[in-house]
Image (cartoon, rainbow over all chains, first blue to last red; front, side):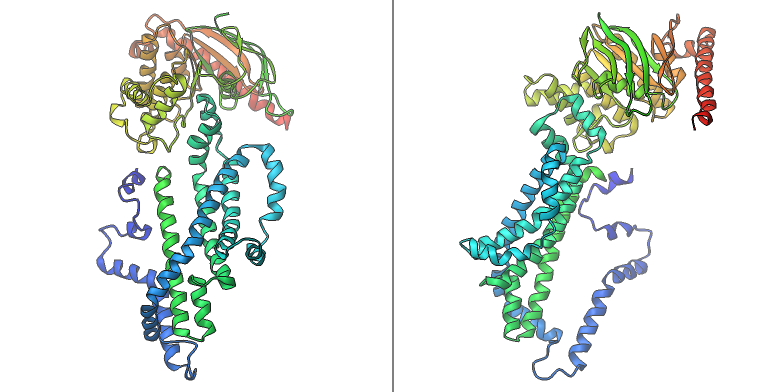
Amino acid sequence: MSEAIAMDDPFRDPAASQASPRIPARRRLVRALESFSIWIALFFVWMLAAEYLPLGDNPLIPSPALTFAALQESLPELWKGTISSFCILIPGFFLASAAGIAFGLAVGASVRLQRIFFPFARVAAPVPPTVYIPYAIAILPTFRLSAIFVVFIGAFWPVFHNTAAGAASLEQRYRDNAAILGLKGFEYHWRVALPATLPHVFSGMGVGLAFSFVLLTVAELFGANAGLGRFVQFYADYADYPRMVAGILYTGLITWLSMSLLEKARHRALFWLR
Amino acid sequence: MNGLTLENLYFAYDSSALTLENINLAIPAGQFVTLLGSSGCGKSTLLRLLAGLQAPTRGRLAWHGEPISGPSLERGIVFQDYALFPWMSVVDNIAIAIGKARPATPRAARREEAAAYLEKVGLASAIGKYPFELSGGMRQRAAIARALALGSPLLLMDEPFGALDPVNRARLQDLLLEIRESSTPRKTFVFVTHDVDEALYLSERVVILGSSPGRVIADLPVDFPQHHDRRALLTSDAFHALRESVAETLAADTLQRLSSVPAAA
């Protein structure tokens, strides 16, 4: 079974596994370039635009050199912003994941709970959580708490929905097996329903995490005094476009790193699916 | 009564068609019975009823005189291809069964006991492995080990060797017979298959189910002098005579079903 061999290195890039030794080095190089081609093209467009577009003294498109200098200068401030943002993102996202998984499993396993929850979820879930931001800020004692609340709401629904759908469509064979062994209650959920539902849980968490970043940066526009979204907004207000673009790039990098981390966790937790 | 009792058993998944019609069987404790029939005749459904995974629409179902009302560790089951949880190692799959069957066993002892069952079925090398790392034959061995670990006096098997190659299939059939010989008191087996040779080689009694709806069309004792000696059995005239008559019964049922299809449609 080839899947079993791939187990040795669970974090291998899927593209890398195609590069078997039989493929000549030149073709491998071409393949590597292909996966970077859009980055390279965008970089050139950026460079040329910054160089040749007549934009006056304070260009809206700062050159790459200017931007990277600004990035380097702002790194301490960006790092502080990252910590501030993560103090919102981590509690919001992980509480939402825990609640989404727990409720999702319970609701997915019980037709009665589905009758109770789904009519509410159908209406409540599509409400954009951004509309809660001003009210949350007004009601909750601190900005951080309100931002955590909004991230929580945004990440909760996708995790809940996916988990509930996964638990409700749990394969009959796992149910049969659990029934034969007499696994019930917590033991059933912990040892059978949760592992069997994990693929759904992780897709929900992926959507939830991406959405958390959106909500985080939007919430920070409202009242934060630090943070990634706040950084970009602050320098945009002062028309410091090199720093603003640096902030955008940095936020992109952090988002990508966070998503990759979740992907690695997924890969490791679902080893038995390969 | 000692053993399994099925009385006037009816089952329908929905009101439009009966899956099982008026099944009456008495299976004494310690007997090895195969349920033989073509695909879709309801033999797997009957096994699910015996396991308590599904309730009969009508009729009575009892084990040692006690009505069967749900799954129980008294009745272990081995499915065709999926008796194990893929996210647990093989030894954990069996340890969890031991934990349910004998909750007083300490955690570490459960794993030791599980390893012993795996050795018994020839899987000593696979103890720490996961089901996806095993071949189909090894997975079925592990599934049998789990059923044994439950300690159930009644073993229900739903085409457990259906997906295996002939060599592995023969090996596991012999393993099953060994287990049966060595168990005291003898375990009762209800074994579902559509393989006539397998049925005759393994069992003391073959119950043939006809299709649409599933019902008993023949109930034959299997009593060869060289039972369980594969080579002697396969070359004996008695075996071939019985095999022929069983195959004819099955073929007649299939023909009847095929000819009744246009009329029904």
